Image (cartoon, rainbow over all chains, first blue to last red; front, top):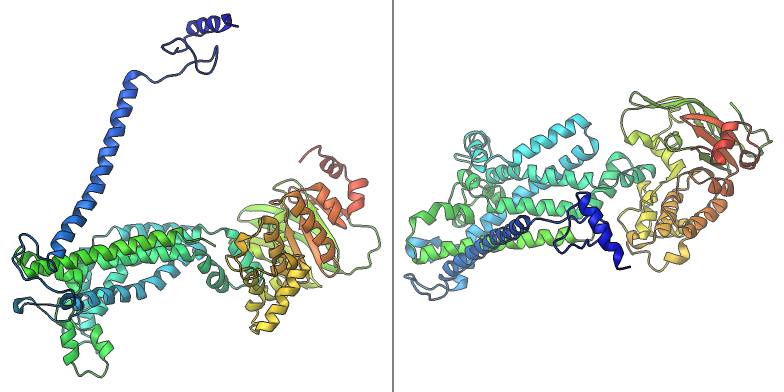
Length: 346
Length: 260
């Protein structure tokens, strides 16, 4: 039927339908042929290019930071161009607790231990508090309170860390130094971990609330229909069911805590020699003592010392190595989050 | 109230008198009275939104998980009021098990799913637990299919197997009544017929109340059928009579598909 399409196309054109340039409609005779204008197609192509450039920029930026950190950080251990300082061995940096840059001793173990200690303690406080608050918001609170709490948590996530630092410095530290636990300044792990915990609790709460809300109601009902009390249903069914997402919440909280510099720097006391100080101490309760000993972490030390060192000097290079270490630690945490998030849910 | 007229040899297990149920300001059930006999299967039928599932959930008070509900009238199990008779809700739920519309196995192993109930009630001894688990899985006609993979996650089972696992899980605490809320609505015909066979076996020792949308299913598995409409009981009778000679015109219209 060679005749038929022509007739239909004519009819379609008369009816005001747009027609393809070559006069043929893709959907068969008589169907309206909708089509983008030339300008539209050009705009699409440029937009595509724009998006590509933006995403490449972001990737390039991250790669660039890593490259910069790596070259400067590794300069401490490898003879490199522009390196005015001494080349160090890995062990005298990573396995030594002796940090005395003016005497050419660069042990960063106190900072690694400080970072791990303070984040670990913070997570120890924040994880149970955050998960239980999440359970409460998702499964127990009445609707009005749930909405209120969610909004409050979202607000808290957005508070700048320096505000938490000021709160720690002006409220918590004076309060703690008045107790029997601490003589004088009271700065150290305990207060830092507390401030960090307060900072990361909202993140953990938000994510665990999501985790519990995304569980099918049938799980909760099923557990209670078997005679579980409210608490047994939560503890034995809901928390295990939400475990992958709860772990993700904790790792994200951990990531925020380990990278935090400002708030911690304001309350930790910034004492790079804290390990040595601990060794000399004859205290009967060393753990308690450690909680209130002014200390330092990777981030606080970077903030404190980086502006005062000359580029290319050994001191400066080691600080960059610390930055690289932080970067890698955070990367590992992010990868772990991905891993956990993908973990089979049930 | 229209009640069954045949002489019944089994005692009354659950008795409902002038029961009303409201969710907030919304009245869902009103003026309901009926009796459910032990070791019989009672089917509840009716169009969507007529309150069938709500009615079922009143027997184990599981609706209390959602807040703001109000139950009026009397519901008795073995002559004791389950709302005001001083019955512990945990004990009530042990005695009155429930199977839900969609299979809801816990994200645990097959074994742990069945052992969940006994563990709640303090059974710790491994051999005892093993015995309970095997027994419950056998009763649910699942043992032969899963005995070699008890440690595997329940989420790897088919829908029909999961639903039978949920039945086994409910049976593991030795209930007297089993509530089934459209237990086959998410299952294929073969899985459905397995569950239906199972219902026939289980009623030897259990009182079963089943809500179903499927008229043929009600006719196949139940001894009594109650027809609900807009939160009220229209008619309850022996199933064969409901499906052959109902006394109320509306019942006939519903089961013959003229509305609903």
